[in-house]
Image (cartoon, rainbow, N blue to C red):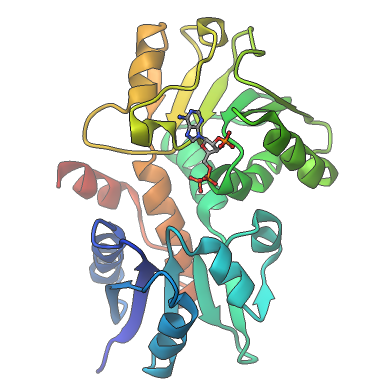
Length: 275
Ligand code: ATR
């Protein structure tokens, strides 16, 4: 039997762990899945995706810098993708429409709640950043009904815009925006969604936002403790997590959408950690 073809499309893409994750899912579930990485030219995302589906591709994951283009390219979007303004999962639905979904927020929430045992319900949450990565996770976080969600960003206007965009999903959650210098009280959970770590930079936060019980989550991951998590540990945080689990969980949700089979993730996270 021929395998069904899937791919992650990005630029660059050679560093992507998605082929490894999906091949682990495929062997674990016995699903006939073959998953590759495709580097699209920066001006050729749509053509690359079209050609892949024409060759019989069944589904595409999308990574930097094409998530917004994937959202635009689709004929229809799931509700969570619509609000996220970006898509990481593409497939043709039963009516032949190119459909865009975004599984990043669901992946983050699953990693926090199921893998790390955190309860977001009633929690005071601080999220750092207001770019595409943060926009993609706000809806699923609000769905957990935290007591408050504070979005802090270097450019405050972008955090303000996210508050406006998600105000209708906030329910009883106090949703607010600010700069990095404003928060001065401990939070239950602090999520770093800025790309500052890429430059080895730190958002200039007051150490007062961290107490021993604060849980810290960096959406980035790396072999070493991330710059942000290192800083948090130095301020007295005892629980810090990186984004590897989120990466595997968003992949698992894409796999479930495409195959209608839910892979087990703990062993895959463990394997990747040991790679
Ligand atoms: P992504 O898709 O990773 O979210 P993005 O949309 O470019 O990428 O957003 C990057 C985020 O990281 C933004 O919130 C950005 O802050 P600004 O909105 O003020 O640009 C934040 N960021 C990037 N570099 C940073 C740094 N050195 N310090 C603090 N925040 C930084």
